[in-house]
Amino acid sequence: MDKTPSVRFETIEFIAGDGMKLNLQHAIGEKLPTKSPVLLVHGAGVRANIFNAPVETTIVEYLTAQGYDVWLENWRASIDFSPNNWSLDKAAVYDHPYAVKKVLQLTGTASIKAIIHCQGSTSFMMSAVAGLVPEVDTIISNAVSLFPLVPTFSKWKIRIAPYLLKPFVQYLNPKTALQPRTTLDRILRAVVKLSHNECDNLACRYSSFMYGSGHPTLWRHENLNSETHQWIAQEFGFLPLSFYAQMGKSISEGRLQSVDGFPELAEDLVSSPPKTKARFAFFAGQKNVCFLPQSQTRTFNYFNALRPNFHSLYTIENYGHLCMFIGKNAVRDVFPLMLQELEKS
Image (tube, rainbow, N blue to C red):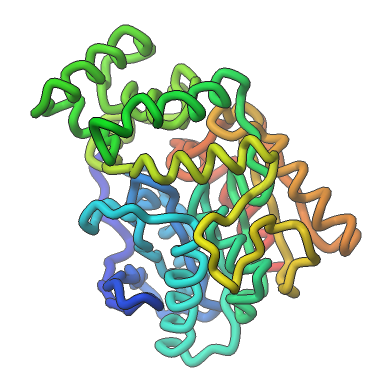
């Protein structure tokens, strides 16, 4: 798809709470923003650029056209940085609060909004319920948040696979499917080829192998244009096996668990009332097989019981996990609903 982007980006570094250098991608549109800053937070094994798929209109372009001041956070899971054994806890305590403070400092505003996806969502939710981002007044969460629920086969896979691989490798990476360098790379490539034959894009198939049990796992093929299906090969990278341990524990418990012992975070994130006044809008693709849509339904029910009729839930028919943002028709099917939530407050 040939088009001229309606936004350009400036990179602004910020220092995380533990000293790690991270950055924000600030979207600069054709007109000056007239509305609140909105922080977009990517998932695991990708980067901020995941919100810039080659589609008719990206979520970034859509929001800047509506007058919002859009910022994309590259947190420590971003593949733009060197591989590291990040955890959701480190992101919750060290990354997101400092990204929010940087946006507040640069914009001079008292509050911002956030759109958070997948493990950017789980870790940002940890920040929110712990009271670490009180300046965020509206949070739109996609796919999963406090209650990670997955298909039965994925439960077994996340319990077994990391232990089998741990003696040999620290990270999984779809790029090794395209350029295998070691014997293990070639073995995993062969496993992917045997177990996933849903398309001819090996990076797509490897991503499904890494993230769950779907064919494919992270999107519905019919929701992607051909350019995006090829583009994803450059947008997926390292994922530490240490992450699987934390998510496996959370899936086994049926609720998000912290693992690093930070005093700011309770081990069980729903053991006490959330320390946030933010309004939440929970989004889920009805056909998401990475995290089941019941994940978001359960989190909505948790918040709704605490403050009835304040939060929102959307289950989008015929959508999966990431195609909520990179789908060719998301600009018509999903983005207007997210905009509706941003405009409420």
